[in-house]
Length: 279
Image (cartoon, rainbow, N blue to C red; front, side):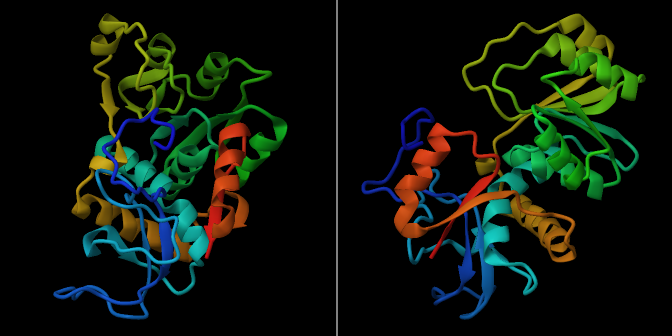
């Protein structure tokens, strides 16, 4: 958004940042859902005309704000916020995951991927994912993946067919250029595919195999979810964070004064997790 790659109408001046966690300092007139001193977290800021969260104090509409259990630290809540809501919307609202199903996630240690792995396991699914190094494969196992494919040394398609010969029920794509031929080949009858990246990609699509298998395709962006939909995500995330089933994937923590450096790091490197700014 800062670079203009993702085009939004932005207020001027503009404060970036989507996520935050902290303590309520004051409440507006008519707000009954929160009180001064409450621990809370939020996401979906810095979008659609709203100001962001890279600030010492922020103003958030109450319906975008969620209680934070006492046992969950602020860094965990902030790091999990946007990626967790995205994962929950895709798994439960869009794809309607069921216990016992098999979920295949491209990139299980990325921001959203790490959340999808953990939530799918919490929902009772069997999880297959990919990673590009031995260290990331180990991390995916720590997050709960049942099977991890090292795509730098193994064939994704061959390994998925070995692990799930009847096909996967849910294929979660995180790459900007999806391979629909491969995905549909790996999906079970009535399999679902979730898309959340690739704004400019125009891949070929095998219509015949897709409809003959009775598959479905689900694309979404989290910032278009309603407050009620996000509230449902937050309630589940709070339960899992409080119980330790939903862990944050934090790579670095920097003070707010180094926000520009955090952006430089994120832009230049494969960070391997979230960057959290502390106030």
